[in-house]
Amino acid sequence: MTDKKKIMYFLCTGNSCRSQMAEGFGKKYLGDTFEVYSAGIEAHGLNPNAVKAMAEIGIDISSQTSDRIDPDLLNKADYVITLCGDANDKCPMTPPHVKREHWGFEDPAKATGTEEEKWAVFQRVRDQIEERIKRFAEESK
Image (cartoon, rainbow, N blue to C red; front, side, top):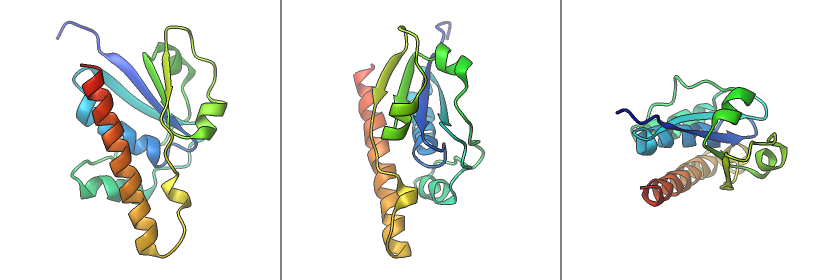
């Protein structure tokens, strides 16, 4: 392929759950046309339940790293997608050429209740992120 891939950068607070799952789905559904990355305002480490939730549907994100926002990558990105209000509010300014969108999802790491109830939140948020990325993939064809 001679065309340069576009860059998609998913951002959330800690680059632990939502943006990690989005990166995994982004690589699956958008990998032919996008280089996909994720980062956080902070780096909280990869959440084991996010890894487990993705593994449950056959996507391995265990080798992804939890990173803080890279200003160079932010400025090179074609799309910056914030996945939580905190990232949307605190994301550094982006140049005019960067398309910025906000797709808000609840933080599964903050789920309360029994272990089963918390796990169900991870599964639900995972599925919501997948549906949103599939929709983006369809819209960007």
